[in-house]
Image (cartoon, rainbow over all chains, first blue to last red; front, side, top):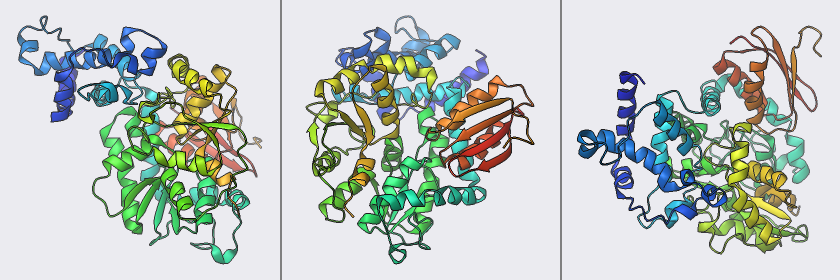
Length: 422
Length: 80
Protein backbone atom coordinates (compact mmCIF):
# COMPACT_ATOMS: atom_id res chain seq x y z
CA UNK A 1 0.00 0.00 0.00
CA UNK A 2 1.33 3.42 -0.91
CA UNK A 3 2.14 5.68 2.01
CA UNK A 4 -0.14 8.43 0.66
CA UNK A 5 -3.15 6.08 0.66
CA UNK A 6 -2.27 4.86 4.14
CA UNK A 7 -2.18 8.45 5.39
CA UNK A 8 -5.56 9.14 3.82
CA UNK A 9 -7.03 6.05 5.44
CA UNK A 10 -5.65 7.03 8.84
CA UNK A 11 -7.36 10.42 8.44
CA UNK A 12 -10.62 8.62 7.61
CA UNK A 13 -10.19 6.48 10.72
CA UNK A 14 -9.60 9.60 12.80
CA UNK A 15 -12.81 11.17 11.46
CA UNK A 16 -14.75 8.35 13.15
CA UNK A 17 -13.11 8.72 16.57
CA UNK A 18 -15.96 10.19 18.56
CA UNK A 19 -15.94 9.74 22.34
CA UNK A 20 -18.30 6.72 22.24
CA UNK A 21 -16.20 5.16 19.48
CA UNK A 22 -13.01 5.57 21.52
CA UNK A 23 -14.80 3.94 24.43
CA UNK A 24 -15.82 0.99 22.22
CA UNK A 25 -12.25 0.61 20.98
CA UNK A 26 -10.61 0.82 24.39
CA UNK A 27 -13.05 -1.03 26.64
CA UNK A 28 -13.29 -4.68 25.53
CA UNK A 29 -12.30 -6.96 28.43
CA UNK A 30 -12.20 -10.17 26.30
CA UNK A 31 -14.94 -11.66 28.47
CA UNK A 32 -16.35 -13.55 25.47
CA UNK A 33 -19.98 -12.94 26.37
CA UNK A 34 -20.60 -11.64 22.85
CA UNK A 35 -19.28 -14.83 21.24
CA UNK A 36 -22.47 -16.93 21.17
CA UNK A 37 -24.59 -13.80 20.59
CA UNK A 38 -23.64 -13.59 16.91
CA UNK A 39 -25.85 -15.64 14.59
CA UNK A 40 -22.88 -16.25 12.27
CA UNK A 41 -20.82 -17.72 15.11
CA UNK A 42 -23.79 -19.66 16.51
CA UNK A 43 -24.33 -21.19 13.07
CA UNK A 44 -20.64 -21.59 12.16
CA UNK A 45 -18.48 -21.62 15.31
CA UNK A 46 -15.28 -20.05 14.01
CA UNK A 47 -13.30 -17.38 15.87
CA UNK A 48 -13.45 -14.97 12.93
CA UNK A 49 -17.21 -14.77 13.34
CA UNK A 50 -17.13 -13.58 16.93
CA UNK A 51 -17.98 -9.90 17.44
CA UNK A 52 -14.83 -9.35 19.51
CA UNK A 53 -12.62 -10.81 16.76
CA UNK A 54 -14.18 -8.56 14.13
CA UNK A 55 -13.71 -5.54 16.36
CA UNK A 56 -10.15 -6.59 17.15
CA UNK A 57 -9.11 -6.10 13.52
CA UNK A 58 -10.11 -2.44 13.79
CA UNK A 59 -8.84 -2.16 17.36
CA UNK A 60 -5.32 -3.19 16.37
CA UNK A 61 -5.18 -0.52 13.68
CA UNK A 62 -6.37 1.95 16.31
CA UNK A 63 -3.54 0.84 18.59
CA UNK A 64 -0.95 1.22 15.83
CA UNK A 65 -1.84 4.74 14.77
CA UNK A 66 -3.61 6.36 17.71
CA UNK A 67 -2.08 4.89 20.89
CA UNK A 68 1.38 5.65 22.19
CA UNK A 69 2.15 2.00 22.93
CA UNK A 70 1.32 0.98 19.37
CA UNK A 71 3.52 3.74 17.98
CA UNK A 72 6.63 2.97 20.01
CA UNK A 73 6.26 -0.77 20.75
CA UNK A 74 3.63 -2.18 18.37
CA UNK A 75 4.44 -5.84 19.11
CA UNK A 76 3.40 -5.46 22.76
CA UNK A 77 -0.11 -4.33 21.99
CA UNK A 78 -0.50 -6.49 18.87
CA UNK A 79 -0.83 -3.32 16.84
CA UNK A 80 -1.53 -3.85 13.16
CA UNK A 81 -0.09 -1.98 10.20
CA UNK A 82 -2.66 -0.83 7.67
CA UNK A 83 -1.78 -2.69 4.48
CA UNK A 84 -3.43 -4.80 1.77
CA UNK A 85 -3.69 -7.84 4.04
CA UNK A 86 -5.35 -5.77 6.73
CA UNK A 87 -7.86 -4.51 4.17
CA UNK A 88 -8.77 -8.13 3.38
CA UNK A 89 -9.31 -8.77 7.09
CA UNK A 90 -11.42 -5.62 7.37
CA UNK A 91 -13.54 -6.78 4.44
CA UNK A 92 -14.17 -10.19 6.00
CA UNK A 93 -14.99 -8.61 9.35
CA UNK A 94 -17.30 -5.91 7.98
CA UNK A 95 -19.16 -8.11 5.51
CA UNK A 96 -19.66 -11.06 7.85
CA UNK A 97 -21.38 -8.65 10.27
CA UNK A 98 -24.98 -7.75 9.50
CA UNK A 99 -25.04 -4.84 11.93
CA UNK A 100 -27.85 -6.49 13.88
CA UNK A 101 -26.36 -5.38 17.26
CA UNK A 102 -27.45 -8.51 19.08
CA UNK A 103 -23.92 -8.69 20.52
CA UNK A 104 -24.31 -5.17 21.91
CA UNK A 105 -27.34 -6.24 23.94
CA UNK A 106 -25.24 -8.96 25.57
CA UNK A 107 -22.01 -6.96 26.00
CA UNK A 108 -21.65 -5.80 29.64
CA UNK A 109 -20.15 -2.55 28.34
CA UNK A 110 -22.62 -2.05 25.51
CA UNK A 111 -19.89 -2.08 22.88
CA UNK A 112 -21.48 -1.40 19.51
CA UNK A 113 -19.78 -3.69 17.00
CA UNK A 114 -21.82 -2.19 14.17
CA UNK A 115 -20.26 1.19 14.94
CA UNK A 116 -16.79 -0.32 14.98
CA UNK A 117 -17.54 -1.98 11.65
CA UNK A 118 -18.49 1.43 10.27
CA UNK A 119 -14.79 2.27 10.54
CA UNK A 120 -13.91 -0.86 8.59
CA UNK A 121 -16.44 0.00 5.91
CA UNK A 122 -15.17 3.57 5.62
CA UNK A 123 -11.56 2.42 5.27
CA UNK A 124 -12.60 -0.02 2.55
CA UNK A 125 -14.35 2.79 0.67
CA UNK A 126 -11.24 4.96 1.04
CA UNK A 127 -9.15 2.18 -0.47
CA UNK A 128 -11.69 1.44 -3.23
CA UNK A 129 -12.00 -2.04 -1.79
CA UNK A 130 -15.68 -1.99 -0.76
CA UNK A 131 -18.27 -4.22 -2.50
CA UNK A 132 -18.66 -2.75 -5.98
CA UNK A 133 -22.33 -3.67 -6.09
CA UNK A 134 -23.24 -1.68 -2.99
CA UNK A 135 -21.47 1.41 -4.28
CA UNK A 136 -23.26 0.98 -7.61
CA UNK A 137 -26.62 0.88 -5.81
CA UNK A 138 -25.73 3.91 -3.71
CA UNK A 139 -24.62 5.82 -6.81
CA UNK A 140 -27.81 4.89 -8.68
CA UNK A 141 -29.86 6.05 -5.72
CA UNK A 142 -27.99 9.36 -5.51
CA UNK A 143 -28.33 9.79 -9.27
CA UNK A 144 -32.08 9.18 -9.13
CA UNK A 145 -32.36 11.94 -6.55
CA UNK A 146 -30.26 14.36 -8.59
CA UNK A 147 -32.25 13.66 -11.73
CA UNK A 148 -35.63 13.59 -10.04
CA UNK A 149 -37.11 16.37 -12.20
CA UNK A 150 -36.33 14.36 -15.37
CA UNK A 151 -37.63 11.16 -13.83
CA UNK A 152 -40.90 12.44 -12.40
CA UNK A 153 -42.81 11.64 -15.58
CA UNK A 154 -41.51 8.06 -15.70
CA UNK A 155 -42.27 7.64 -12.02
CA UNK A 156 -45.83 8.93 -12.44
CA UNK A 157 -46.32 6.61 -15.44
CA UNK A 158 -45.21 3.71 -13.29
CA UNK A 159 -47.64 4.72 -10.54
CA UNK A 160 -50.52 5.01 -12.99
CA UNK A 161 -50.10 1.33 -13.79
CA UNK A 162 -50.54 0.43 -10.13
CA UNK A 163 -53.78 2.30 -9.51
CA UNK A 164 -56.13 -0.53 -10.48
CA UNK A 165 -54.32 -2.90 -8.13
CA UNK A 166 -54.73 -0.41 -5.27
CA UNK A 167 -58.42 -0.10 -6.03
CA UNK A 168 -58.78 -3.89 -6.10
CA UNK A 169 -57.72 -3.93 -2.45
CA UNK A 170 -59.79 -0.91 -1.41
CA UNK A 171 -62.49 0.49 -3.69
CA UNK A 172 -62.85 4.27 -3.79
CA UNK A 173 -65.25 6.60 -5.47
CA UNK A 174 -63.86 9.61 -7.33
CA UNK A 175 -64.99 12.08 -4.67
CA UNK A 176 -63.11 10.24 -1.94
CA UNK A 177 -59.68 10.64 -3.47
CA UNK A 178 -57.08 13.31 -2.88
CA UNK A 179 -54.67 15.00 -5.21
CA UNK A 180 -56.33 15.00 -8.59
CA UNK A 181 -58.48 12.02 -7.80
CA UNK A 182 -55.90 9.31 -7.73
CA UNK A 183 -55.60 6.37 -5.36
CA UNK A 184 -51.85 7.09 -5.14
CA UNK A 185 -51.55 10.80 -4.35
CA UNK A 186 -48.13 12.32 -4.87
CA UNK A 187 -46.56 15.73 -4.21
CA UNK A 188 -49.54 16.95 -2.16
CA UNK A 189 -48.58 20.00 -0.12
CA UNK A 190 -50.32 20.08 3.23
CA UNK A 191 -50.89 16.33 3.41
CA UNK A 192 -50.63 14.98 6.94
CA UNK A 193 -48.42 12.02 6.13
CA UNK A 194 -45.59 11.47 3.66
CA UNK A 195 -45.16 7.81 2.82
CA UNK A 196 -41.69 6.84 1.70
CA UNK A 197 -41.79 3.55 -0.18
CA UNK A 198 -39.32 1.34 -1.95
CA UNK A 199 -39.03 1.42 -5.72
CA UNK A 200 -41.10 -1.75 -6.12
CA UNK A 201 -44.84 -2.07 -6.57
CA UNK A 202 -45.11 -4.41 -3.57
CA UNK A 203 -44.12 -1.53 -1.31
CA UNK A 204 -46.70 0.88 -2.73
CA UNK A 205 -49.91 -1.05 -3.52
CA UNK A 206 -50.84 -2.49 -0.09
CA UNK A 207 -49.72 0.65 1.73
CA UNK A 208 -51.83 2.87 -0.54
CA UNK A 209 -54.89 0.66 -0.01
CA UNK A 210 -54.55 0.87 3.79
CA UNK A 211 -53.97 4.66 3.79
CA UNK A 212 -57.06 5.10 1.62
CA UNK A 213 -59.11 2.76 3.79
CA UNK A 214 -58.14 4.77 6.89
CA UNK A 215 -59.07 8.05 5.19
CA UNK A 216 -55.51 9.28 5.70
CA UNK A 217 -54.47 12.56 4.08
CA UNK A 218 -51.33 11.13 2.63
CA UNK A 219 -48.92 11.65 -0.19
CA UNK A 220 -46.28 9.40 -1.70
CA UNK A 221 -42.66 10.48 -1.76
CA UNK A 222 -40.85 10.86 -5.08
CA UNK A 223 -37.85 9.25 -3.42
CA UNK A 224 -37.21 5.67 -2.45
CA UNK A 225 -36.76 4.93 1.23
CA UNK A 226 -33.83 2.52 1.12
CA UNK A 227 -30.50 4.06 1.96
CA UNK A 228 -27.80 2.20 0.07
CA UNK A 229 -25.32 4.77 1.33
CA UNK A 230 -25.84 3.34 4.81
CA UNK A 231 -25.40 -0.24 3.57
CA UNK A 232 -22.01 0.51 2.08
CA UNK A 233 -21.10 2.74 5.03
CA UNK A 234 -20.59 5.97 3.10
CA UNK A 235 -21.60 8.87 5.37
CA UNK A 236 -21.78 11.41 2.52
CA UNK A 237 -24.08 9.33 0.36
CA UNK A 238 -26.12 8.29 3.41
CA UNK A 239 -26.79 11.94 4.18
CA UNK A 240 -27.57 12.88 0.57
CA UNK A 241 -30.16 10.11 0.32
CA UNK A 242 -31.62 11.00 3.72
CA UNK A 243 -31.68 14.77 3.24
CA UNK A 244 -33.74 14.74 0.09
CA UNK A 245 -36.58 12.99 1.92
CA UNK A 246 -36.27 15.39 4.85
CA UNK A 247 -36.36 18.34 2.42
CA UNK A 248 -39.39 16.92 0.62
CA UNK A 249 -41.21 16.43 3.94
CA UNK A 250 -40.49 20.01 4.94
CA UNK A 251 -41.48 21.38 1.52
CA UNK A 252 -44.82 19.55 1.69
CA UNK A 253 -45.27 20.59 5.35
CA UNK A 254 -46.32 17.12 6.44
CA UNK A 255 -46.75 16.20 10.10
CA UNK A 256 -45.45 12.67 9.81
CA UNK A 257 -42.99 10.74 7.67
CA UNK A 258 -43.96 7.08 7.48
CA UNK A 259 -41.26 4.70 6.36
CA UNK A 260 -42.18 1.54 4.48
CA UNK A 261 -41.10 -1.95 5.44
CA UNK A 262 -37.38 -1.30 5.20
CA UNK A 263 -35.30 -1.57 8.38
CA UNK A 264 -32.34 0.49 7.30
CA UNK A 265 -34.52 3.26 5.88
CA UNK A 266 -36.50 3.44 9.12
CA UNK A 267 -33.49 3.55 11.41
CA UNK A 268 -31.62 6.11 9.31
CA UNK A 269 -34.67 8.41 9.15
CA UNK A 270 -35.58 7.90 12.82
CA UNK A 271 -32.11 8.33 14.26
CA UNK A 272 -30.22 10.52 11.80
CA UNK A 273 -32.71 13.12 10.57
CA UNK A 274 -32.20 15.35 13.61
CA UNK A 275 -34.80 17.68 15.05
CA UNK A 276 -37.56 18.15 12.46
CA UNK A 277 -41.12 19.49 12.50
CA UNK A 278 -42.46 16.04 11.65
CA UNK A 279 -42.60 12.69 13.42
CA UNK A 280 -41.02 9.57 11.99
CA UNK A 281 -43.01 6.35 12.09
CA UNK A 282 -42.82 2.86 10.70
CA UNK A 283 -45.69 1.62 8.60
CA UNK A 284 -46.34 -1.06 11.22
CA UNK A 285 -46.80 1.62 13.89
CA UNK A 286 -49.20 3.46 11.61
CA UNK A 287 -51.23 0.33 10.89
CA UNK A 288 -51.46 -0.45 14.61
CA UNK A 289 -52.68 3.10 15.24
CA UNK A 290 -55.37 2.84 12.54
CA UNK A 291 -56.67 -0.38 14.10
CA UNK A 292 -56.66 1.06 17.64
CA UNK A 293 -58.50 4.18 16.48
CA UNK A 294 -61.03 2.12 14.51
CA UNK A 295 -59.99 3.70 11.21
CA UNK A 296 -59.60 0.32 9.55
CA UNK A 297 -61.32 -2.98 10.26
CA UNK A 298 -59.73 -6.33 9.57
CA UNK A 299 -61.26 -9.68 8.71
CA UNK A 300 -60.05 -11.99 11.46
CA UNK A 301 -61.08 -15.12 9.60
CA UNK A 302 -58.48 -14.84 6.84
CA UNK A 303 -55.52 -16.25 8.75
CA UNK A 304 -56.19 -19.88 9.49
CA UNK A 305 -52.59 -21.03 9.72
CA UNK A 306 -50.15 -20.55 12.61
CA UNK A 307 -48.07 -17.40 12.26
CA UNK A 308 -44.75 -16.24 13.61
CA UNK A 309 -43.09 -12.85 13.20
CA UNK A 310 -39.46 -12.05 12.50
CA UNK A 311 -38.48 -8.77 14.14
CA UNK A 312 -36.24 -6.88 11.70
CA UNK A 313 -33.20 -5.86 13.76
CA UNK A 314 -33.21 -2.24 12.60
CA UNK A 315 -36.92 -1.83 13.34
CA UNK A 316 -37.23 -3.78 16.61
CA UNK A 317 -33.98 -4.09 18.59
CA UNK A 318 -32.48 -0.93 17.07
CA UNK A 319 -35.66 1.02 16.34
CA UNK A 320 -37.97 0.18 19.23
CA UNK A 321 -40.95 -1.08 17.21
CA UNK A 322 -41.78 -4.27 19.08
CA UNK A 323 -45.36 -4.14 20.38
CA UNK A 324 -47.04 -2.81 17.21
CA UNK A 325 -46.51 -5.85 14.96
CA UNK A 326 -47.74 -8.19 17.71
CA UNK A 327 -50.86 -6.08 18.17
CA UNK A 328 -51.50 -6.08 14.41
CA UNK A 329 -51.11 -9.86 14.24
CA UNK A 330 -53.47 -10.28 17.18
CA UNK A 331 -56.01 -8.10 15.38
CA UNK A 332 -55.58 -10.25 12.29
CA UNK A 333 -56.77 -13.16 14.38
CA UNK A 334 -53.49 -15.00 14.09
CA UNK A 335 -52.55 -18.16 15.97
CA UNK A 336 -49.35 -16.34 16.91
CA UNK A 337 -46.12 -18.01 18.04
CA UNK A 338 -43.15 -16.02 19.33
CA UNK A 339 -39.69 -16.74 17.94
CA UNK A 340 -37.89 -15.76 21.13
CA UNK A 341 -39.05 -15.07 24.67
CA UNK A 342 -37.75 -11.50 24.49
CA UNK A 343 -37.80 -9.90 21.02
CA UNK A 344 -34.72 -7.82 21.91
CA UNK A 345 -32.72 -11.05 21.69
CA UNK A 346 -34.23 -12.25 18.44
CA UNK A 347 -31.75 -13.72 15.96
CA UNK A 348 -30.90 -11.67 12.91
CA UNK A 349 -32.13 -13.15 9.61
CA UNK A 350 -28.54 -13.06 8.39
CA UNK A 351 -29.16 -10.72 5.46
CA UNK A 352 -28.53 -7.26 6.89
CA UNK A 353 -25.66 -4.88 6.36
CA UNK A 354 -26.03 -5.00 2.59
CA UNK A 355 -25.53 -8.76 2.32
CA UNK A 356 -28.88 -9.42 0.65
CA UNK A 357 -28.31 -6.65 -1.89
CA UNK A 358 -25.00 -8.31 -2.78
CA UNK A 359 -27.08 -11.24 -4.05
CA UNK A 360 -25.38 -14.44 -5.20
CA UNK A 361 -21.99 -13.22 -3.99
CA UNK A 362 -23.05 -13.66 -0.36
CA UNK A 363 -25.62 -16.45 -0.79
CA UNK A 364 -23.50 -19.28 0.63
CA UNK A 365 -22.48 -17.29 3.73
CA UNK A 366 -26.01 -15.99 4.26
CA UNK A 367 -27.49 -19.48 4.17
CA UNK A 368 -24.90 -21.03 6.46
CA UNK A 369 -24.96 -18.17 8.96
CA UNK A 370 -28.76 -18.27 9.12
CA UNK A 371 -28.93 -21.85 10.40
CA UNK A 372 -29.98 -20.65 13.89
CA UNK A 373 -32.69 -18.48 12.34
CA UNK A 374 -34.02 -21.38 10.29
CA UNK A 375 -34.06 -23.63 13.38
CA UNK A 376 -35.82 -20.94 15.41
CA UNK A 377 -38.57 -20.55 12.81
CA UNK A 378 -39.07 -24.28 12.37
CA UNK A 379 -39.41 -24.83 16.13
CA UNK A 380 -42.53 -22.66 16.16
CA UNK A 381 -44.19 -24.93 13.57
CA UNK A 382 -45.67 -21.78 12.06
CA UNK A 383 -46.79 -21.93 8.44
CA UNK A 384 -46.64 -18.19 7.88
CA UNK A 385 -43.53 -16.17 8.64
CA UNK A 386 -44.41 -12.49 8.71
CA UNK A 387 -41.91 -9.67 8.72
CA UNK A 388 -41.77 -5.92 8.11
CA UNK A 389 -38.56 -5.40 6.18
CA UNK A 390 -37.84 -6.04 2.52
CA UNK A 391 -34.28 -7.10 3.24
CA UNK A 392 -35.40 -9.63 5.85
CA UNK A 393 -38.19 -10.82 3.55
CA UNK A 394 -35.69 -11.57 0.77
CA UNK A 395 -33.30 -13.34 3.13
CA UNK A 396 -36.05 -15.32 4.87
CA UNK A 397 -37.41 -16.40 1.49
CA UNK A 398 -33.93 -17.63 0.52
CA UNK A 399 -33.58 -19.45 3.85
CA UNK A 400 -36.99 -21.02 3.44
CA UNK A 401 -35.96 -22.52 0.09
CA UNK A 402 -32.48 -23.49 1.26
CA UNK A 403 -33.63 -25.35 4.37
CA UNK A 404 -36.84 -26.67 2.79
CA UNK A 405 -38.90 -24.95 5.42
CA UNK A 406 -42.62 -25.45 5.11
CA UNK A 407 -43.38 -21.76 5.64
CA UNK A 408 -44.67 -18.86 3.55
CA UNK A 409 -42.83 -15.55 4.06
CA UNK A 410 -45.20 -12.58 4.01
CA UNK A 411 -45.04 -8.83 4.46
CA UNK A 412 -47.07 -7.74 7.46
CA UNK A 413 -48.40 -4.71 5.59
CA UNK A 414 -49.69 -6.94 2.79
CA UNK A 415 -51.44 -9.13 5.34
CA UNK A 416 -53.18 -6.02 6.68
CA UNK A 417 -54.16 -4.85 3.20
CA UNK A 418 -55.49 -8.28 2.26
CA UNK A 419 -57.67 -8.40 5.40
CA UNK A 420 -59.29 -4.98 4.99
CA UNK A 421 -63.05 -5.02 5.41
CA UNK A 422 -64.56 -2.66 2.86
CA UNK B 1 -40.20 -6.02 -30.72
CA UNK B 2 -36.47 -6.03 -31.41
CA UNK B 3 -36.69 -5.50 -35.22
CA UNK B 4 -34.48 -2.44 -35.26
CA UNK B 5 -31.99 -3.44 -32.60
CA UNK B 6 -29.73 -6.47 -32.76
CA UNK B 7 -29.94 -8.08 -29.33
CA UNK B 8 -26.91 -10.07 -28.09
CA UNK B 9 -28.25 -11.22 -24.73
CA UNK B 10 -31.73 -11.39 -23.23
CA UNK B 11 -32.21 -11.06 -19.47
CA UNK B 12 -35.54 -12.15 -18.03
CA UNK B 13 -35.98 -10.12 -14.84
CA UNK B 14 -39.73 -10.58 -14.57
CA UNK B 15 -41.07 -10.81 -11.04
CA UNK B 16 -37.95 -9.39 -9.42
CA UNK B 17 -38.53 -6.43 -7.10
CA UNK B 18 -36.27 -3.39 -7.43
CA UNK B 19 -33.31 -3.07 -7.17
CA UNK B 20 -32.66 -6.69 -8.25
CA UNK B 21 -33.18 -5.96 -11.98
CA UNK B 22 -30.29 -3.46 -12.01
CA UNK B 23 -28.21 -5.71 -9.75
CA UNK B 24 -28.60 -8.51 -12.31
CA UNK B 25 -28.02 -6.25 -15.32
CA UNK B 26 -24.93 -4.65 -13.81
CA UNK B 27 -23.43 -8.14 -13.65
CA UNK B 28 -24.95 -9.42 -16.88
CA UNK B 29 -23.59 -6.57 -18.97
CA UNK B 30 -20.08 -7.82 -18.27
CA UNK B 31 -20.96 -10.95 -20.26
CA UNK B 32 -21.27 -8.98 -23.51
CA UNK B 33 -18.61 -7.02 -25.40
CA UNK B 34 -18.51 -3.24 -25.59
CA UNK B 35 -20.90 -2.24 -28.36
CA UNK B 36 -23.21 -5.24 -27.85
CA UNK B 37 -26.79 -4.95 -26.60
CA UNK B 38 -28.73 -6.50 -23.74
CA UNK B 39 -32.50 -6.75 -23.80
CA UNK B 40 -33.69 -6.60 -20.16
CA UNK B 41 -37.31 -7.48 -19.42
CA UNK B 42 -38.69 -6.34 -16.07
CA UNK B 43 -42.14 -6.17 -14.51
CA UNK B 44 -41.43 -3.82 -11.61
CA UNK B 45 -42.45 -0.19 -12.30
CA UNK B 46 -39.45 0.96 -10.25
CA UNK B 47 -37.34 -0.12 -13.21
CA UNK B 48 -38.54 2.94 -15.11
CA UNK B 49 -36.42 5.15 -12.86
CA UNK B 50 -33.78 2.60 -11.81
CA UNK B 51 -32.52 1.74 -15.30
CA UNK B 52 -31.92 5.33 -16.55
CA UNK B 53 -30.11 6.18 -13.30
CA UNK B 54 -28.01 3.02 -13.51
CA UNK B 55 -27.14 3.74 -17.16
CA UNK B 56 -26.11 7.28 -16.25
CA UNK B 57 -23.84 6.23 -13.38
CA UNK B 58 -22.36 3.19 -15.12
CA UNK B 59 -21.78 4.98 -18.43
CA UNK B 60 -23.88 2.54 -20.45
CA UNK B 61 -26.58 3.60 -22.89
CA UNK B 62 -30.29 2.81 -22.98
CA UNK B 63 -31.12 2.68 -26.69
CA UNK B 64 -34.84 2.20 -26.26
CA UNK B 65 -37.53 1.53 -23.65
CA UNK B 66 -40.75 -0.28 -24.47
CA UNK B 67 -43.79 -0.74 -22.24
CA UNK B 68 -46.42 -3.40 -22.68
CA UNK B 69 -49.39 -4.08 -20.44
CA UNK B 70 -47.28 -6.23 -18.11
CA UNK B 71 -43.63 -5.58 -18.95
CA UNK B 72 -40.91 -3.01 -19.33
CA UNK B 73 -38.28 -3.79 -21.95
CA UNK B 74 -34.94 -1.98 -21.96
CA UNK B 75 -32.37 -2.21 -24.77
CA UNK B 76 -29.03 -1.43 -23.20
CA UNK B 77 -25.82 -0.96 -25.16
CA UNK B 78 -22.61 -1.70 -23.32
CA UNK B 79 -20.49 1.37 -23.80
CA UNK B 80 -18.33 1.20 -20.70
